[in-house]
Image 1 (cartoon, rainbow, N blue to C red):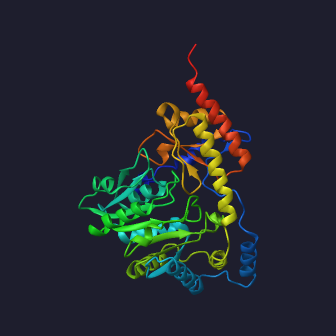
Image 2: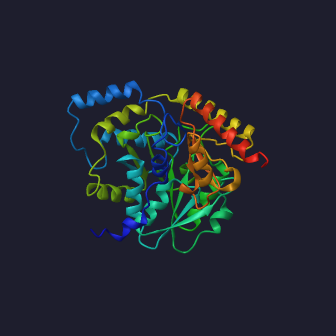
Image 3: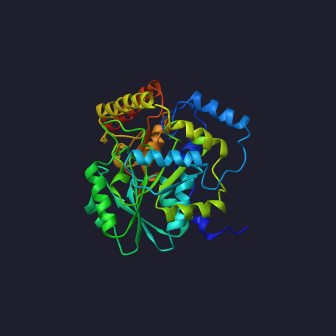
Length: 372
């Protein structure tokens, strides 16, 4: 069978390769997966069961059920985000694909801060556009100077992800404002991926979208309330874009899952502060443990990832060493054009994190030990 040429533009997920490599491990210390380690709240399960029994199992309107769309609109109005309309998508990943399909033509360029969430680069290439990676090492901050060095006359879109996967970086108000002014002065659209907005550990969350006159915002409940398998997210933004996304969804996803939409409506009312406090303690545990072991690491301000530099500077080789010691982490070149770092997910129990820190400390000591 001759597959379409675009198939070659997408490689197998690097994270999946780690899983394949570690398939033979027994009871691994798993710090690799970007998945909350708690179950979906019982209140939401009850809502879902009630919706199923009430017969809400059919197609919905393509853009989503009206009560959910109204609740999304109110959510952003209360936070001062100037979005005109919204639509409900099959997860934030589905929303990203719809935005890329509606906005990008072959040859258009997309500015993506590096390190990056793997889907940004893959989907950009899949659509036929060109990803332009903006190097943010070693501090993972986004400055106007770094953006100016990467922009061209073909730049169509800038992606902001704060809090960020894989670094946990949270942009400051000054960084958000500078990025917004840079993009708007050049007529560049800005997509703000705010899926990790519930996981900000130091001060109030500064939304990149609040600094934009016409932002495109992607978010959802996969991470905040552990609904990853329910595939529910949304896109909010300019009216003409949302109408275009809805048209495309009609011929692709058709609609987001009906029961998931009913459940998401209730999720807006949950207080997830206790979860955030628990994850802050885990952030402190892993960040302090790595620093004490001698790792060069930036303390994450949000999300549930930390992105240390690998001893010896080869992230992939270091990950192989970790796996040999029953520890699962992900090489940094999965998320970056560089191979100098590795990603740890601290969405795991404190016991698991402590076991992971012990292995990582031992690996660092082995690197530093003088050769006989």
